[in-house]
Length: 391
Ligand SMILES: Cc1cc2nc3c(=O)[nH]c(=O)nc-3n(C[C@H](O)[C@H](O)[C@H](O)COP(=O)(O)OP(=O)(O)OC[C@H]3O[C@@H](n4cnc5c(N)ncnc54)[C@H](O)[C@@H]3O)c2cc1C
Image 1 (cartoon, rainbow, N blue to C red):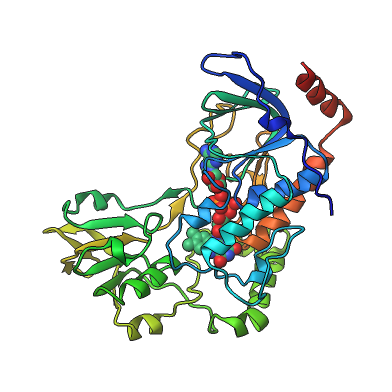
Image 2: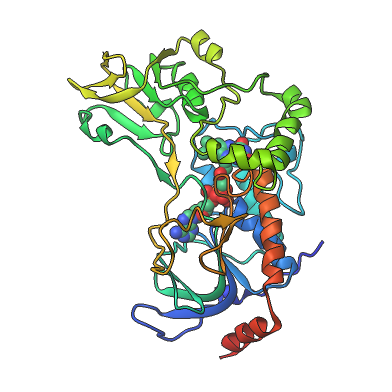
C-alpha cells in the first residue's frame, strides 16, 4: 500500500499579489472540490499515481457533512460497505455505524494517507480560460488542468415556497438542520416528506411529540433492515445498484432515467412501525391556511413545529464558465463532463449507477475517474504543469 504523501504543492500557495483580491496562487494538475468520501476516495488513487493535486473543503473538519446530520442517524449501509479504498471500516462488519463514527473514519483516512486536504477553503469561483481552470477560494487561487466536483449530492435543502407563509411562532427546520427533538417546542409536529429522512425523524419525534407525517409513502424494501439483511439481502441490493442498474447495461439505461424522479424505498423504518408508534400518516402538504398547514384533502393542521424532509438539489453557484451549455450536468458519462475536457463529477446522484451516491458506488466511480485521469495525462501536459510550478 502506498502511503507516500502526495506532492503537497497544492497547499503551498505562493506569496505575492497575483490578481485583484488574490494574495496567493498555485498551479496543480488536479483540484478536487470537496473532501467528503468522494473527494477522499479519488485522492487516494491520485496519490498512488503521485499526481500533484489538492482537495479543497469548506468545512472545518473532514467528515463534517456526516457530523452535521441529525444526532441519532446511523448509516443504512453496513460497515463492510462503508470503507474507502485501502482501508476497510474497522470493527463489526455487519454493524451500522453512527454518523459520527463514519465522520471520524473519514478524518482518520485523510490523515493516514496524508491526503492534501485544505480545510476552511470554500470555493467561491470556478472559471476556465480556454486552457486551464482557475479555482478561487477567498484570496487564494489554484490553476489546474482538471477539476473534480465532489461537493456532494445533498447541497441545497429544498423547501416548498409556502414555508415562508407559516406564522413566525411555528418552529420549522429542514432535515439538514434538524438535530433532535429538543429543538422543538411543545405541541404537534408535522414532518413533511415520507422518504427515509422523514420516516426516521417522524419515528423519533413521535416519542416526545404528537406527530403527523405528510406525503405519499415511498415503497419499502421487502425485508427487515438489520444484521440479517446486512448478511443476506443487502449484498443483493448492492449488486443490483452497482452492476445491474448502471448505464452500461440495457436495463440500467432503461431504468436509471426513471429513477431520477422516483423516491428511494424506505429502508429501515416501515410504515407499520410508524403507525405502531402513533405517527399519523396524512396526505401531501400543499399550502398554508389560517396559520396551519393545508393538506391535499383540504384539511388544515394546527402545527407547532414543521420539519421539512423534502430533499436537496445539487447547486454550483460559484461555477462561472459561460462556455458550458446549460444542460452540462446531463451531458456526462461516468462523471466525465463531455462539454468541457478536464471537468469531472463524483458522488452525484445516478452519474453512472443507482449506487453512485452511496459509499460503494463512490469508491468504484473514483477508481474509474482516476484511471481516466491517468490516461489523459500526456507527458507534454505533465511538463507544462511542472514548468508552471517551477515558474
Ligand atoms: C440522511 C442521509 C443518510 C445517508 N446514509 C447513507 C448510507 O447509509 N450509506 C451511504 O453510502 N450513503 C448514505 N447517504 C448518501 C451519502 O452520504 C451522500 O450522498 C454523501 O455524503 C456523498 O458523499 P460526497 O463525498 O460526494 O459528498 P459530501 O459527503 O456531501 O461531501 C461534500 C463536501 O464538499 C464540501 N463542499 C461543498 N461545497 C463546497 C465548496 N464550494 N467549496 C469547498 N468545499 C465544498 C462540503 O464541505 C463537504 O465536505 C446518506 C445521505 C443522507 C442525506
